[in-house]
Amino acid sequence: MLKSLLFRWLRLMITSVLCSLPIYLEYVVVISDNLILFLSFIAFVVAVGIDAYQFSSIYWKRQAYYVGQLSPLALYSVVGFLTCLIFPPAVFNRIFLPLRFAGCFGMQTMGSIVLVSIIVIMLVTGLRFCGARAGRSNHNMFVR
Image 1: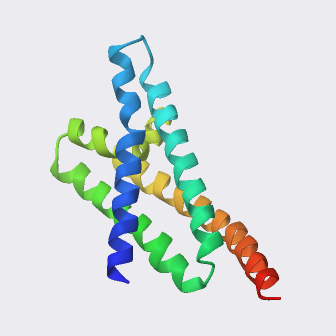
Image 2: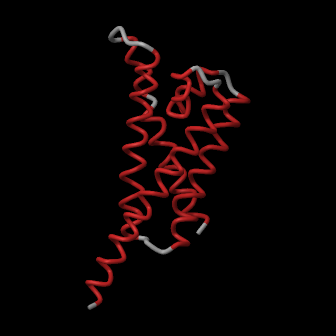
């Protein structure tokens, strides 16, 4: 169970780093910081949303939600918060740029981490219900 949690968290971290790549667009084209934050957040939400739905359609039991989705997201948020406290902003931005999305609206980084984490957890929870319903109905149809 711990191994599954760590693999899901590692997958979330890799997704976050990949979704932080729009920060390098400013070296290629003229682009605003808010657009970079928006692109990063949208890419992260889409990737995490697709993953949450697919995971829930396969592992639709409640325990899988807590261990496979909610715990890695909480761990991701805590590590992001600690990274913001310990490391300079350049390091934080290269790893956790999607968590700074609320900065588009003038919010401080700490508040943005909390708000974006809550939004992502709510989104994953909603998609979990849809994916679990689809997975359960497919399982019941297959069993019949």
